[in-house]
Image 1: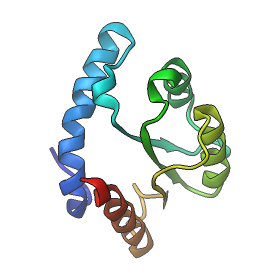
Image 2: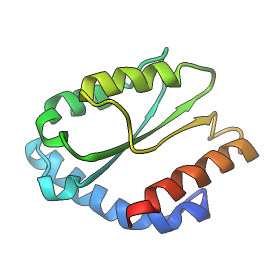
Image 3: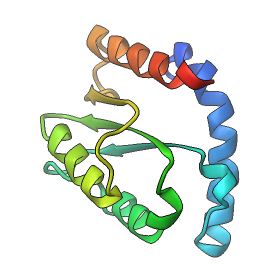
Image 4: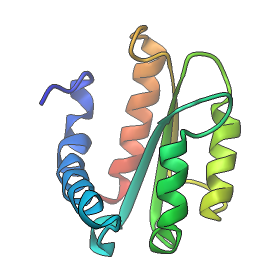
Length: 130
């Protein structure tokens, strides 16, 4: 597996294993075991200040299972709108705030020091309870 930001590997690799298990389970029966959902990290592209429809559907269909979990979110955008999208996601989840958030500006095409700093900050926050 190639990780574009090697500094993220310490939090990414173990969490990816859980994502694989949850993804397989979700693909089989459209549900995810609660024990795989202690910590949730939702990542999405910003589409006109909105979350992507598949993310909205997943959250809507699993809202009860997501209640009371530690939820973090990151957004990737080419322009603006991430903060509005975070607000819409918080409303959909019925939460006051996320454990951690990060906004990455055009990360695929523009590797930047700003994105690296935001990633480092996001990772440090995620590690707080590891």
